[in-house]
Amino acid sequence: MRKVLCLSVCITAMGGSVQAQSLREIEARNAAAHALEDVRRDLLAGQIEASNAQERARTDSLLRGLEQQRANSVLTAPSMTVPPARPVDDPARREADRANAMSRIDQLTQDALAQSNARMRAIRPASEPKR
Image 1 (cartoon, helix red, strand yellow):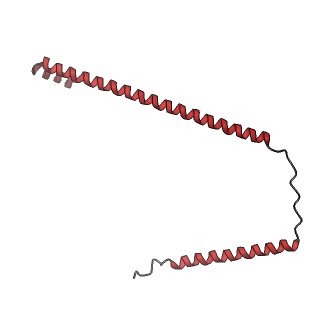
Image 2 (tube, helix red, strand yellow):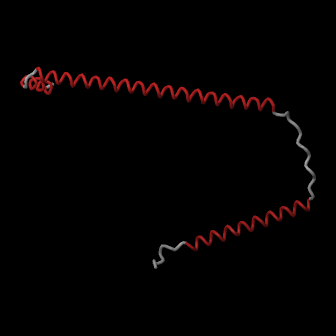
Image 3 (cartoon, rainbow, N blue to C red):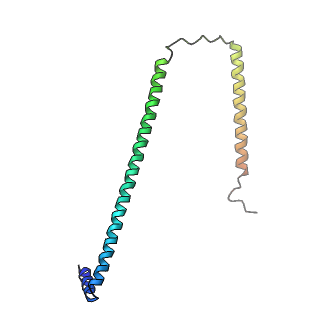
């Protein structure tokens, strides 16, 4: 309140009408700038809302299409049928395949262990002096 009173006294003392006119022009320009900023902000908010509405419509359309595809695939899916009978495997062949698979797993395990050990040996201990 003091600042306003001081300002008005200063304006009156300095010629009053010229300064007041200038102050009114500044206030009018500021008011116009604020109004323009409000309009710009409202326009931007409208654009964002329109973009959001378009995105929602696109998403809804996409979901409806996917739902229709799913419904069509369920309707056209073949009814439950019995799978064809598997040929009878020879027990000796099955054991040979299992033995081959086990030896392959053992070999892969040994290779992985050797790689891990090589990595561990490549790490210089913190207690070792730098060269």
